[in-house]
Image 1 (spheres, rainbow, N blue to C red):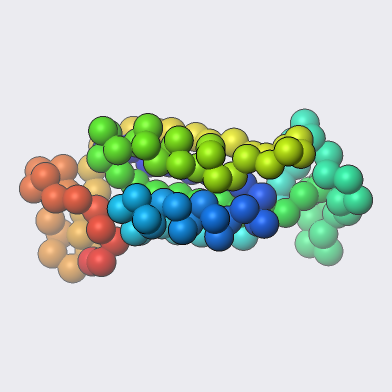
Image 2 (tube, rainbow, N blue to C red):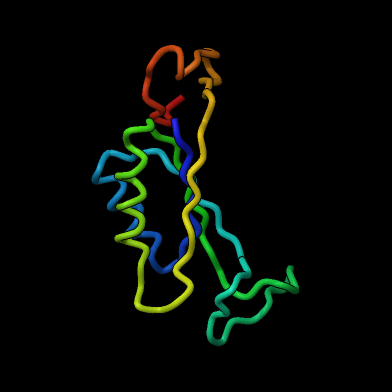
Length: 118
């Protein structure tokens, strides 16, 4: 299994989620945050809570089967891209296993898909 973490601009989130959902990726986690990086957003200012951040960001996380990862990445790349610099970044990691909380069942051993419903 693979975990995808994509840090994208808030104004692109809806399009990314809709496109992923239409392609069968139904279970995602979204977190709103602030980030800093090489690109400095025009007119960005530090938040009230953090003195070092310069732009809003949404972290989208999803776990999928190995063979589905490239498709999800391609969908995110296509739909998160803008004409402006600083569109974000995608990280891909291996997931050793996942367990359903209700049953303790291993998704790796059962071969079940992580649908997020448990």
